[in-house]
Image 1: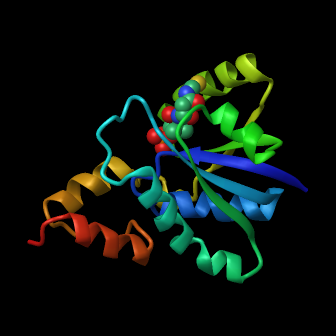
Image 2: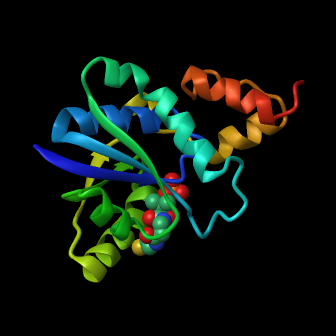
Length: 164
Ligand code: PNS
């Protein structure tokens, strides 16, 4: 069994992310979900601490079922987070060929800079269209994102978004 780091912005966590967490716990054993800062997405909706707390709520059922999942917030590099967390490698979910292009570049860069390897987990087929960016946009205008996020996230989105 291995310990893996699953880094992401998770702004907010959605059902596709939760599926990758579940698959990773099943495949690898121990998962550290790392809420990270993405420099190309400077204006996030939730703070790192809020995102970490929200992820904790969403993985409660998996933990109760015996999954070994830790949730942490890291402000810096994913490779440093992997080292601090004691992770053997990094896990990323792939939704599309577009994701692969971006992730492959990051995987090679992270390996070159640190020796930390990345493995990909295919996103569940029916969840591969979901993106945090579109969830933020729809929620911002009071739209319904209930089919795309775990229920605790809905409550937090309602807190920060206007109602229709
Ligand atoms: O959910 P996202 O926004 O697609 O996740 C991207 C994320 C946060 C995993 C990536 O931006 C990241 O690793 N950020 C931490 C900074 C870092 O390690 N940069 C070097 C990338 S090669």
